[in-house]
Length: 85
Image (cartoon, rainbow, N blue to C red):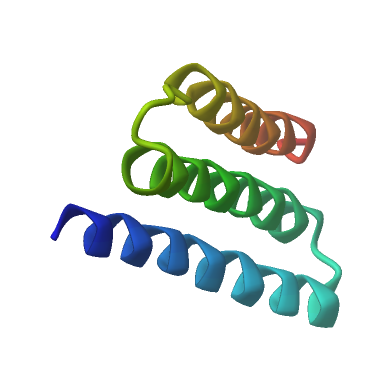
C-alpha cells in the first residue's frame, strides 16, 4: 500500500510540474517557470523515494532524496526572491 501512495505522490508532482510548464509556455511568467522547476525537482525526489523504498530495498537513498528536494525548494525560494521586485 505504501508503494501505491509513493507512486501517487510522484504522479501528482509530475502533473503539477507539467501544468506549470504549460502555463509558463503560454504566459512566460518567470514565477511559473521557477515553480515548474521546483515541482520537477520534487518529482525526481518522489521517484527516488519509490526506488528507495520499493525497488532497491537494500540501499539507502534518503540523503540523495533529501538533497534533491532541498535543491528543488531552493529553486522556488530563489525564484520568489528574484521576482519580488
